[in-house]
Length: 153
Length: 258
Image 1 (cartoon, rainbow over the protein chains, first blue to last red):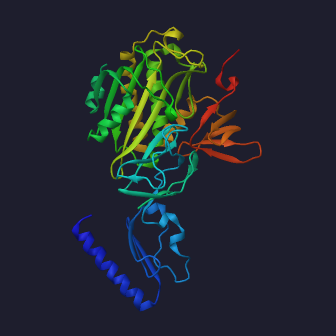
Image 2 (image 1 turned 135 degrees about the horizontal axis):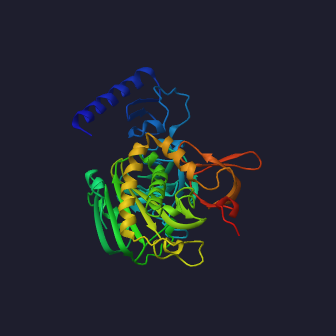
Image 3 (image 1 turned 45 degrees about the horizontal axis):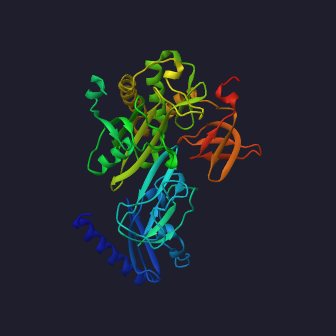
């Protein structure tokens, strides 16, 4: 991300925070191109998540009555989303050691799991270094495009 | 091993090795080290050849072991379609070097190549993200030229009366792959790939079984959907879309006569 972008993001967040005060809303979320910015009072402070646009419906303004976003793991800033439809495997072979489990420390690029579609085995990497805090899929079960697979924080 | 002049003109390169653990593992290691392909890696023999889900691919000298590395050729969601592209290229190459197999060779979902219902080649495709959203895809292809595993409903070119050295098959395969990749066009023209695959596939319209972690399900193999998933119509009328699993066909679907 360029310095320009960062500056714009900061300005945008500042504007949204101001708007939040003026309107009395608890949460505002906007999405542009591949960037989504959400500003909320509780429980999360400020989050700025880049996600594939197709993976999430565009939400311009969340009414105060909306259910808390924290319940939806796909909205979690640490969510690793499936880039394809297929079957998820947590190990390289049946009965093998899982690539990553809850509590595993991973480096960016480490394989978290494999998604198979049409005998194409796709290694899904950790998008960032951190700790796996949630595993949201079961070994050998189908996953959809955009489905949250794991949370890495 | 040698590439044809047209493949070389197409920018394809070749690294021919004697012995390697696995041509797929080697190609993925190259991608991690910055190689962007298209690059073929071939070997005379593999010491840890692998198949789907950790299965062993026996790799004696005399057979073909080749992997094609490509980077960023398709969006990740379209990469699985390469299974059909590779299967068609393999069919093209095999029937070019052994024309007598035309009519006896057929494809089994998603990418097995059969001769009279027996497996003669296997394809294993592996994808890894190398730079953010850029997917490196390695298509590993093993063809039984001289040897095949015993008793596993497998065959080899030699067993079918076709003496084809792996070198000759490889040159034809690299050419066929280039043509089929151009036809597919990074997924933009999967409709044509899909239609060509369906025309050569076994079991379409027949009752088949699909084995996966969830167990075995049975139904009529109706067609492929627009992304390449197997469309299975079950007896209760439900339609299942299958992205992964082993297809088991009755002998009749394979065209095998007892």
